[in-house]
Length: 361
Image 1 (cartoon, rainbow, N blue to C red):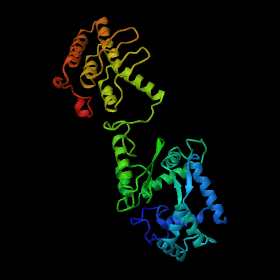
Image 2 (cartoon, one colour):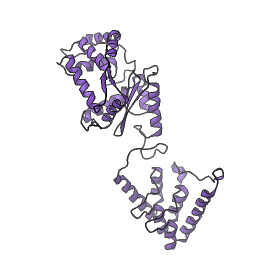
Image 3 (cartoon, helix red, strand yellow):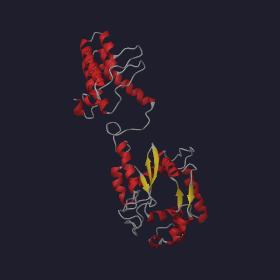
């Protein structure tokens, strides 16, 4: 399975005289001949309609007879491809080329809405289980293979750039539709008829690029260290509990290096434990001046957070007699209060939460 490097309707096969992949016309025509062998055209069509409806969670899936008739009347190139495939013996034994083309034209005439198309994409994102009905429609292996093909071949001659810039499996159509799958997260269907020179929706591709520029959905985005993108994935309770334990232990033991790693991985440095204590509370109570300075100067945490007993970090430092920590916290509190009192135009710039290792050294 390889991208052809040519237009989707080119009369061209690979070195073994087989279609390059199922996403080009030649491959789709051969696939049409492989579905339900031995069944008549009506049974094949009913089977595919039922299958697509299952993928779409019983949302709207229709058939356009006008499109079907138009495809047949103007499908000279597809007929040429069909005869070429027949000459190269690409069809299975017993399959009729004309029947395969008729079935292919029928499949090209199936209609969906953005809503039903997005459910189909979500079914692929959900490992083959429809998120609406909970029914398994595709095996996990079939989903893996389908998404791999969509990633490498789904956007015509733009597939390579799509894989580079967006990094997600997608499939476009000359109707202006783009079906985008974010594995294990969601499926998206967008539709905008204006096409570019290779047959992809201009706005559809722009949407995909903007989506990946805002969220870390690209296959090779680092989920821990990419600081300029949002991660909308739901974080489960176990992950949060582990983060709290790691953060509090680093503050307790005075491990500034560990805290720096946590900050660079975008951990919330104001996480609270079961007593509503923050890392700043713990560090202040233990007298770790370096940790307190890092949390205040680099991470800009809130020094006025109260724990379950109503104490702020300064109270803990004073209670345990850590005078150096008390001085740091008092100065930081004064700076924070002055910042709040200043008009917006005169605000003293406070360094943003640092995004690089160099900035935290």
